[in-house]
Amino acid sequence: MRRFLFSTLCIGLLSGCLSTLPTTSTPPPPAPLSAPQPFILPIEPNLAFFPEVEGIQTDHEYDLAELIHLAQTHNPATRIAWQEAEQAALAAGMVKSTYLPMITASVIAGRQSFHTDHNIELAQLVNIKTRSKDTGHGVVPALTLSWLLFDFGRRDAAHQAALELSTAQQAKFNTAHQLTVFNVARHYFEYNAARQKTQLAHDHYQQSLRLIDAAQARLEAGVGTQIDLAQAKQLTAQARLVWVQHQGVERDSYQGLVGAMGLVPTTRLQIKNTADRPLPPMQAIPSEVELQNALMQRSDLIAADAVVRAAEQDINFVKADYLPTLGLMAVAATGTGSFNANNAVVTSPHIKGNAVFLGMSVPIYDGGLRRQRLHAAESKVQAARDILQQTKQLAFREIHFAANALRTALEAHEASQELLAAAQLTSLAAQEAYEVGLSSMMLATESANALLDATQAAATAHAAALTASANLAFVMGQIDAAQVLAE
Image 1: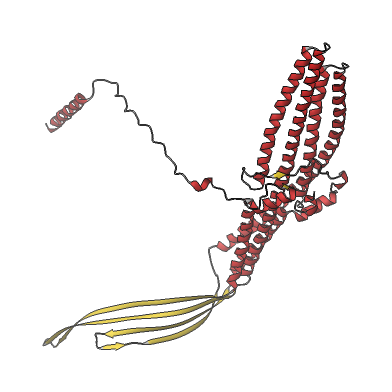
Image 2: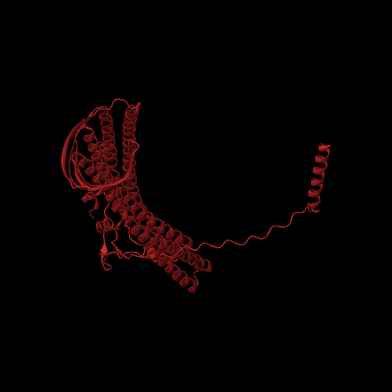
């Protein structure tokens, strides 16, 4: 009977729930989402401010050496590298300070209070309850000296490793300095090449205007045609387009130069022209022996070699953990206090004391931790040696590529000079021949375009040879030599 009532009740509840369900199967449309409010960043006026560059002379024409001096002064990259080298040197100094004793001064002060209840009962005749209060306070200053006397070379290994890392960081600073010099030199030559190409494009545009005048004169004399005049105007329009394009390249090259120096884009400098700068002779390309000897002064190799020696010192540091350490500790203390025993006894003792301890610590068992650390240190040494070998091979390959690039650039410049001489002769002869009616306008425009290509190629080859020379000096670790920067 109870099961029947329970079943009836469940069916009733289910039917009631079903009657409350919506009759339609289409869900109501979702409420429209409000558009998120944009997050407005606060304005920081200091971000739009650049400190004024001191020492810039707007009426002075800067050569390469002067531009490099400005870059060394203002480029953040060299200052960052110098700070990192300074931090490495300070780290070596901090390790060296562990050879000296450590002296610590300390003061201990305190107060203590005792409350004691006494219940004294004598032969069930006398029952006395008393309460006592004892207080004490005092101040104890102390001077502690701790000195690690002997550790079987643990500190020596740490100090030598820090010195090697400092050497590596100084070599990295030298690399950053040389990279700044090379970047300034490269952009200096590229900017001068772009400026020269702009001038050549302007000269080509002026020459095209003279061809228009010649075509117009021949047309008025009855010996020319409208086609000749149209070709001359087409040449002028093309020349003007090339001139405008080179002006944009020149502006971009200037921004690259001031960027390599670490200056803001609004800096205005007058740059000395390098069009007449002599190129190194072919005989100046280093020999195979000189290229290989250049590895001895590559700063990246010096840094990698210092990292190897630092890793080797880490092995000595871990090996020293197997040996005991001997240390000295001395303590000198004095103190004053006061003790009050229930206002009955009051004392004010004054304490002085000193102690000297000589202790030795011997490692016995560490669950294999030292052995694992030794294996890790040996692995780091092998990895550092492999990195040094890889860096050496890459550097030697880089030096050879740079030497080949310089040889190719010098040969290309020599060939471009021959092409330029022939193009100049052809263009001049074709223009003069057209003016007297012995040649066509097509030949004159073609020779004018060929002359522009030849002059641009000569300027490119000259800048490429200068850049290749600076690149070879850079990869050989000689970019900061005086003879490389001499005009």
